[in-house]
Length: 46
Image 1 (cartoon, rainbow, N blue to C red):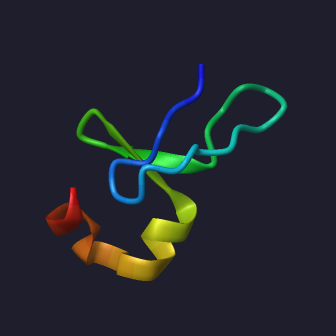
Image 2 (image 1 turned 90 degrees about the horizontal axis):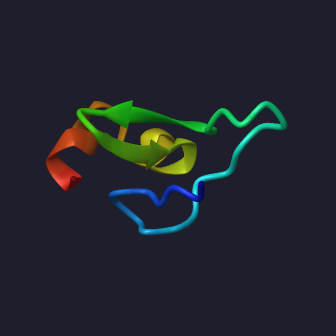
């Protein structure tokens, strides 16, 4: 299942075990690059 980032709308990568390379904030997915870019303020951009 291809998840998309709630901030940048790009596809979130997955590991070979099917885990996403990002995190869930609430029920929305945020990619690792957006986490690095916005830090704790990423919640404001969702």
